[in-house]
Image 1 (cartoon, rainbow, N blue to C red):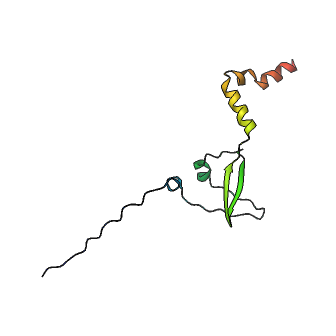
Image 2: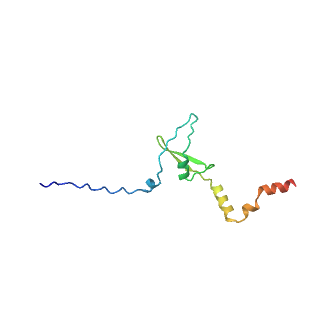
Image 3: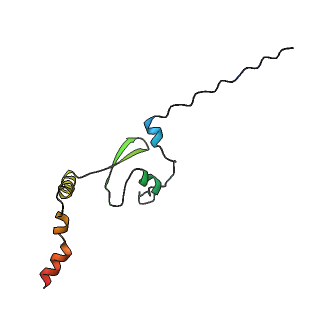
Length: 103
């Protein structure tokens, strides 16, 4: 007697799209009575958001927000200018200038 066994074909692994590769572990946060939330440190690190960064909030859909680092064009231009002139920040040592004024 011959027994036929169907071989289960393995499904090919789904191709990861760009957003899937960047997706981190999902975590939860709660909105406080003052409408504040705490963003998880891992999410901040993955997005390269640091203390002092200004974030713009966009409402995408009901219950869905998008946080985008908001950059000030004039500040970015100033930082680029300072970075392009070696020694400029060293020449503008404010602490040293204040000490000179007190003498």
